[in-house]
Structure formats: C-alpha cells, structure tokens
Image 1 (cartoon, one colour):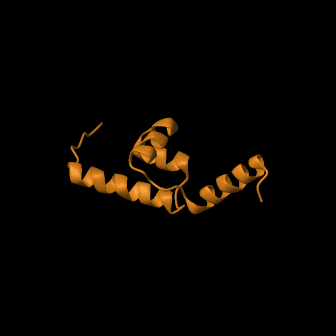
Image 2 (image 1 turned 60 degrees about the vertical axis):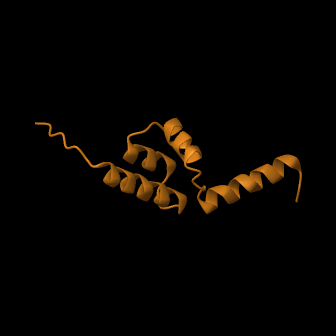
Image 3 (image 1 turned 30 degrees about the vertical axis):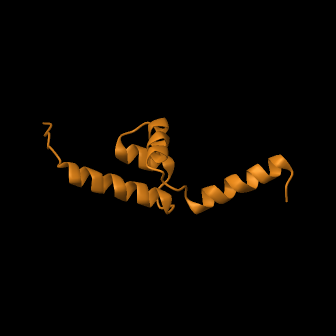
Amino acid sequence: MTVKVKVPARIREKFLSEILGMYSSGELSTGRAAEMLGLPRAGFYQLLAERDVPLPAKLEESIRRELKSLTGRK
C-alpha cells in the first residue's frame, strides 16, 4: 500500500534548507544529500550553484591545494 501525502511548500523548503546546510557544514556527503533530496548528483550540484551554497570547508581546502599544485604556486 502506497500513501501519498501532500507536504506544504514551507515544510519542503525547510527540509531543503536543512539538507543544504548540513552538506555545507560537512555533515552530509554530496551523494547522501542528493539521495535525501531525490536528485541525481548532477542535479544536486546544479541546486548548489543556483542557491550559491558554499562548499564544505574540507572540500574547498582540498580544491585550493590541488589548484595551487597544478599552477606551481606555493
């Protein structure tokens, strides 16, 4: 038996905001956050860009290190 429940928009938005906040703080991985929102990973990345959600600090730091190594800067 499948039950369909209409969730009010403000509750859906609150859930979305919570998931995005947990991702940004590093509590959720990209894959898990996308799964919880029912999105493919590419769709989740698009949502992050649309909402200007900051990357988790560890990921941002890792990307910066990688870019520096690629450009030869110290």
